[in-house]
Amino acid sequence: KVDSIRCDFNHYPYEVTTFARQRILRESTVTERSLVTTCRLVNVSRSDNNPQGFLIESFTIIENRDIGQYER
Image (cartoon, rainbow, N blue to C red; front, side, top):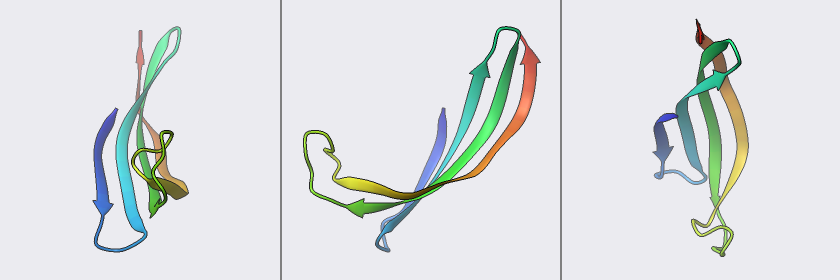
């Protein structure tokens, strides 16, 4: 689940940071994680497969840590 996205369209290439929560369902437990990623967006030609016209570069996972684990 994405909590928020921060994108700086004032400087090119565009820097993007995404803040999200992961929920991993297992047979006996549920694990929740905090996920923070960064990337750069570069303009490319639009197409049927890429209608936004952006290419993601330098995708990096900044944080992927457990917040909690609960019994199902």
